[in-house]
Structures are given as structure tokens and as C-alpha cells.
Image (cartoon, rainbow, N blue to C red):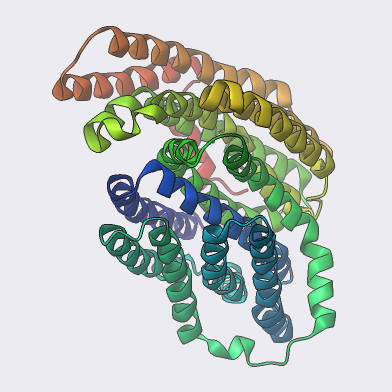
Length: 471
């Protein structure tokens, strides 16, 4: 049992962290060959494309997984009709930009339809592989798509295609990944689609899709707000800083959600087991991941200057703050999967949506005055409110000792933040060489995890129990 679990976890993280390396390579080239304004324009279009794709992907994929992908007609329905809905949504957004005379965005949006349709068409195949726990096949498919996409995007950037290179990478990545899945088993969609199944799946998955949309609405909405209140270059700085942190963050979130949803779904009848599992996953994740994000923030400035040069120095302050906020955000990583496993993704949805709208309105005014630092404050408020809403939502389904989680989390956040603050101050005051910074970084890591061993107990044994115990 534990061996099988370890193999599945390995392939999940192999896929996600393999993507980090490929994304880092393409990101490096985009940062070198694109201006902040070009990066900002491409990011704006990708935001719209991902809003549409992530919504329909969640709407259809999770209900298919919950139904164990037993109906080929449902799979075919998502493949054909679901993808049409996604494309129509993208074209509707392009039409809006056509009437506000932003033609460059219109053409980029139309071109991004390739990515949207490929992503939604892949959902039936991905759902089947998830049900069968064939994470190796998913990893290989994703890596190949990302590899060719990165090559094409980098080539386009080198040849001066600007913002188009970002959309080219996205299109090639999703299209090739779809083709690989089709080659494995195209019989899944060789059935006449059904509008009845489409409505059935949509009714079941719309709350999950809305929650997924809500999860990305705030971050992506900030890009749209910045495009209205500031300049394309500011969007570029914002996207640059978030990308450096979100590369590992999104990979981790995607990995834990892919694995935790089937695990939670199979244990919903045992409230005590699932409560303990949720608590342990959350605590172990914050112990392991919060120091990593803090370290990224501490040495972010040195990384930017050494690797990318002075060109992106305007993003450094925001990067440091955002890294710390991302560490706190770890507390919400497993809430979506738990709510989806119980079929209760709608819990807290209206409150989160209202929270996002209010904060985005505030962001419009504060970003025009304080720029990215104002945006960082808004993001911090969003994360704090999100944690409170998600924990309250989870407590409606399971018995959760939030006080134990809270005190354990404080034992991690407080000492790590103090150490991080001291190191950051020293780096600001003194001028160290790259070699000295490397030594300081290594020493900081050792100190942080040694202190956590004292404040949080033997977390290594805790992690081992989490992997090997029967849940």
C-alpha cells in the first residue's frame, strides 16, 4: 500500500517539477528577449485563456472522476461539446476587446483558442487516467507537451515575436499533450455526444468550476485591474515576480490536488479518518513548504540581479512580499479537494466571490497610487480572508480542531519569519559576494529546519507516518 502510494506521489511530483525546469527555461528566455510591456500584454491574454480553460476543465473533469468515468458518452460529450463552450467564451471576450479598439489583444485572444479547445478536449482522457491512478502516463504526456511548447516559444521570442511567443508556447503545449492522449485511446470519444449529459455534468460540476474560477479570479483579476489602472510594463513587473514564485507553487498545488481528491473521495464515509488526514496534510505541508517560500523571498533580489540583470529590478520588492504570502497560502492547499470530495464545493463560494470583488475594487484605487506595493497588501488581505473562509467551510463537513492547527502553524511561521527577517536585513546592509550569499543561504536552511525541529517536534517522523500509515 505504502509502496504504491509513494510511486504515485513520485510521478505526480516528477510531472510537476519537471514542468518547473521547462517553465524556468522558457521564462528565462522571455525575461531576456521580451520587454516588460510585451510580457505584460502576453500575460493579459493568457489570463483570459486560463480563466476560461480552468473553469470548464474543473466543471467537467471532477464530475467524471467522481463517476469513475464509466460512461463513454459522457466522455465524448465533454470532448466535443465542452470544448465548443470554451472556444465560444474566448471569442466573446475577443469581441469585447474589438469594440474597445484594442485590436492587438483581439488577434492574440483568437489565436489562444487553440489552447482553450485542446485543454478542454483533454479532460476526458485525464479523468480516466486519474481514476486508474496512471500518473506516470499523465506525467509523460505533460512533459512532452511542455518541452515542445517551450522550444517553440523560446524560438519565437528569439526571433522577436514579442507577446506572440507566449501564446505560441501555450498553444503548442496543450495541443501536443492532447495529441499524445488521443494516440493512447481515441475510442473514448468515438460516441455521439449528448446535450443531456452535458447539462448533467455541468449541473454537478458548476460549483467546482466556480470555485476554481474563484481561486484564480483574484490573481488574474489583478492583471486585468493593472491593465486598466497602470501600464503594460507594470503588468510585466507583476507577472515577472509572481511567475518566479508561482512556478513551484502551482506545481505543488496541482500535484496535491490531483492526488488528494481521489484519496478524500474514497474516505468520506469515515469522518474521523478524513479529519485526521486533512489536519496532518495541512500541518506537514506548512512545516515543509513555508520555509521554502520564505527562502525564495529572502534571496529573490540576488537571483533577479544575478540571472536577469537590472532590467527587472522594479519587481524585487513585490517578489519578496509575495513569497512570504505564498508560504501562508499553503494552509488552503487541501480545502478544495476536501470540499469537492463531499460534493460541497459551493460552501463559502458566495462569500469568497464577494471578498474577491471587494478587494479587486480596492485594488483598482490602491494600485494607481502605490503601485505593486499596494497590490501586495491586497494579496495579503485576500489570503488571510481566504484561509478563514476555507477553514470555516471545512468545519461544516468534518470535525476539525482548528486551535491545534493554528498553534502548530504559529510555531512554524514565527521562528521562520524572525530568521528570514534577520537574514534579509543583513543582505540589505552588507554587500556580499555570490559565494558568500550561497554560504549564507545554506546556513539559513540548516538553521530554519533545526529550529523547526525544536519548536514543532520531530517533523521527519510525522512525515513518515503520513506516508506509511493507513488512512
